[in-house]
Length: 454
Image (cartoon, rainbow, N blue to C red; front, side, top):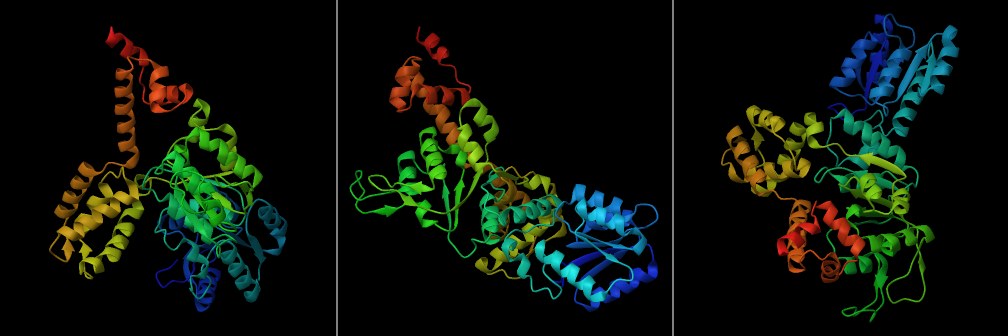
């Protein structure tokens, strides 16, 4: 997208007259246009500022249009390419379309056909159209990025959204997994139906079952009224299961049955309720490894993992850090009565150089601390450094805290039972298999506690 909000096009041709004519015509029709005279310059231009479409001549000295397309396809698979060709090379152009080129036009081209092809490509690939109304980008408007990694991911996400396949989003904590899930929902045919999210790792097992599947009044202590579960609440829409890797094995069995039958029976009910939902799940865990070790059911893994999307860490997309920081600052400034607040150039450079183990969420916290503590409109590097140090000292993710708790708990209970796994499992109200897996996850050997007791 160009600064003016117009769809941005890159035109490539080694004929300077045709290049100039194309650029003038496209600009007159409301597009933002960059023009270069070679395939190599085109790749450099895309790396610097990714366009929404590439229009290239087929026959050029050096890198020709087909070679350029192949480079684009390898590095920017979601970027549509239209090829201009002379009549004598139509067979080459047809072959190119079969290999993934969006379309081709013959010279001399029909201006109306050119505009039609461009608008069609932008519509199908989520572009904003010639007048820059941005309608095609609304589904991803909350995702701030200038990264080719993210753009490729979003292009794949948009293609996946058009269907109904289950999606597994993998990524570290704080990378924005729920944000991506909501974007997929908005890009899907279910956009006008509910989007329902639940964090499977933040709710106790007994409550999680009730939340997902619902319950009937009196089915257990505290069930004072009927409650429909989230599968029913999300009917016709999207259900987002965040941190699915933290779901207990017993509940994974029930979830698999519900997904396979497309019916859910609330706790205490005698009849099942049909539902129609698209399931998007997310995890920071390596589910493939969890599957191999028995920590996650293999059959459920394949049900949920029809399509995998991996969110990059913030360290993998450093070019987004200044843009995200300034966006967060603009969002937070009114809350602190600081509408004119801005980062100094040194402060932005320091943000780019910093390590971000907490990813985008950590960056947001640092920006908020900076604007809250700095008394001047221009936030200098010193306040950014201070905020990062405070954040790094205080930041403990839910997962880290839980790991520490589990490790301490397992250690205490094994000391209490003198290394007896059977007794420890009973006290923890887990079966022996689950308890052994917990011990393996934390690298704890029960035998060591037997030795200590001697």
